[in-house]
Image 1 (tube, rainbow, N blue to C red):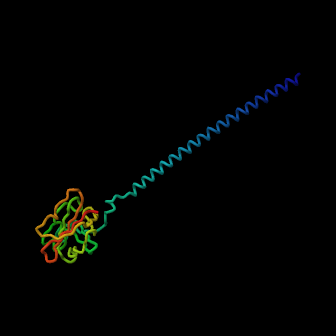
Image 2 (cartoon, helix red, strand yellow):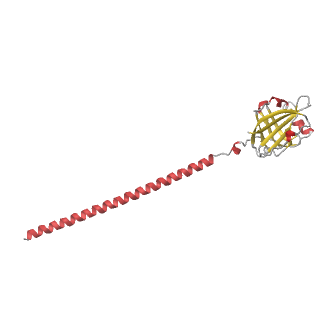
Length: 212
């Protein structure tokens, strides 16, 4: 009888132990699952953070590398303050005929002897019709007649160092009394009119150009 009771007690103890082991295994498995879930969540969060940072860095790099058209047209050129006692506004460059002339601020007999001058219009490289005069002299505007519609030239402002390109859209001769070439446009665009004498000095050669 005692042996039967002992065996039954032993079996009950084993069942209790098995239940504890099972509960312990279940608890351990639950803990492992929770840890795995937390690790996965942290990994996802880090991945999103890294992705966002990459986007910010990319955007910042893009912004830093973005250069406006105006900045692209800023040139490093040495333009004198004065020439022949006249203030210099900028430079006229006609590469096709090999002319680079400082643009003086007043049109007078003395200023025309040393270069091209502002005759009429707005400030240099501003909206409107900027009119430039120059004698039919070698190195000044003698070879302007060699320019054609579609040819390009540029003007550099002394103050801003901005270089603006202009394309010729019309060339014609007129009487000295015809001042229609000085007319100012009203569309907010930048234009340039170059004026010189035709051979013989009886008529004027007019070259009209618009900003490209």
